Image (cartoon, rainbow, N blue to C red; front, side, top):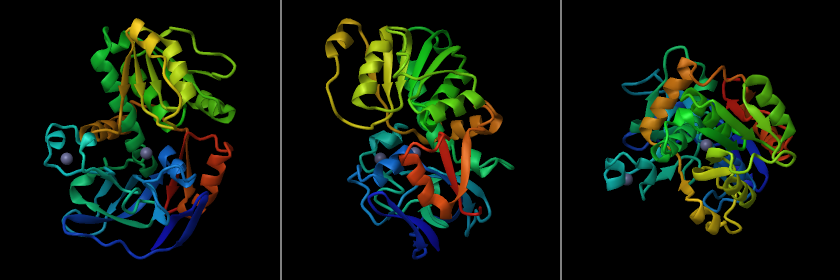
Length: 331
Ligand SMILES: [Zn+2]
Ligand SMILES: [Zn+2]
């Protein structure tokens, strides 16, 4: 089969790879569409020691079951493979399973014509739903999970709060769209890439600012979602959040710098780390994407899998405006 393989730092190679081996309990899937994630970019740059080349990356995937009882069914893949029997799994917090694995990390990912994945990780796609929309399930669920964590701790109904979202990649943008769906009216998105700001402006009705020019209002937001997760954005989050407010840390670009714990203490700021999603978050997100609750999704860009290397290069150079590039094997 053909696959887009991470072969060395800043090198993706479209080449022939052996067919995947389906272990007992695995389904074999023909991939239709798969999104490029910020974490794939992180690996491509050699910044993720868990992802060692040569490796097939990609975990935001949609495809069709090739054999067995469910042959022909279109499915979204839950890329997080967990043990299913520990307290976290049984308690519905599968994302915190100590045994968790992710496709495109230690095992082969979905930038390929086919993949083998446990059958319990398949989520049926509603009839007629475009594969590229369903491929947003994983980043969307990351946003939904973050919003749900914030919703638990804000002192007023979420719809009465104001939110700043830092970073208009797909997770940031989908977080903002989930907030809008939950009735939040005052939402500001901070994004440094001018191409991306223009594209988001064109497709979504949010206030989008360049944080390097116009700093977000100081102590202006009940909730701040940091979808970048760098030293500078963490500092900005603390500056921008109201006293008594919540910072949800979604991105993990670096682990540098210190945080102003004095301000966080004296101003009673809640800081929440968030990692991925639960299976229920994935199902809920797929439903929201299908129902139109998250808008028209016109901001995605689709390319053939064979052109994936160019997409990675353009994303690295900031020449790609789209918050999400989706690679298709059929294209
Ligand atoms: Zn992802
Ligand atoms: Zn577990």
